[in-house]
Length: 242
Length: 96
Image (cartoon, rainbow over all chains, first blue to last red; front, side, top):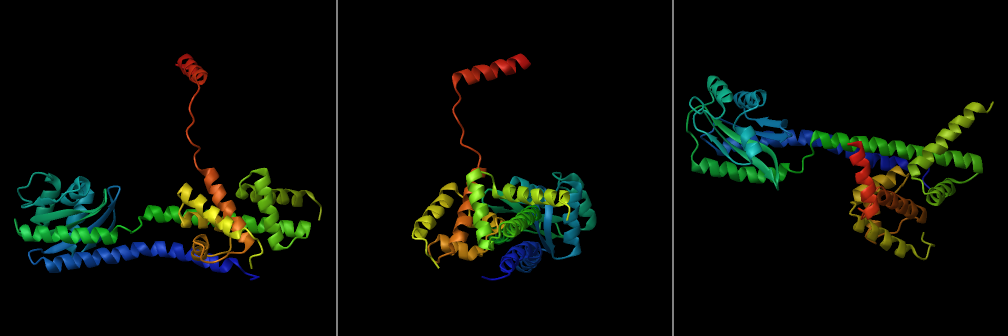
């Protein structure tokens, strides 16, 4: 038997954590690329952006330039704007002229000041979930025609399918704490096996068999059985003079 | 490697228990791993599909993992008896 069996499983486990951590970077790269492609295929657009939104918070944002980023940041700072509405209402939002549009008064005023005069935003929909929004901006009013809107809507469908599998940071935290928990549990089984091997002169496989039989006959979860065995051993070690 | 004559029966029934309770192989493997299981997830999946054998002890640890997951599921809803409802309402009316 392999004297160090856990190492390859540990590799698998750590690989998962690393894989999950990487998905955030992968998502960032993907949204940046999508923003660029959108801008390149839409000559009327001054800039383009993609936001992944989770519980009204942006988790990743891709933008072709600082003006797009500023117009986007303003929406989240002010809590209003075409992308937030596209995301929450799950439908396209067109702003032809920020200097006259009254639907998002604070955002429109700030965007017009910054030089963004028109904007078209579509939601990224994955099944029933809205996972973010894409938008194109222009420094001229009423720039985007039917062809531009149809193109962005088409790109958004493909983008949502690609980005839909990206884990939110919340899930990766949850999974890594599950993995930590399972490593601790596995550790306890190892210690419990060692105690039985030493105390009853068993081999490693015999000790594991004995533990599983105990868990089954007593009807206690394996985790509690091993934790109790380890803490009982700790207690007896402390009281016995060595 | 297999001296246990009912290994195939154990595999099929373990696989059926997982399918019936709706757990993914990933969930089962994580619990199995935390109970000191030594076989990789990919190979556990292959074992469950009947493509390769696992050592007898690993099969038992996997069975333990599946059973613990099933034990952790919320129990099915039970139907109340009339006197239980009368008692429950008397208690809450008295308190309110």
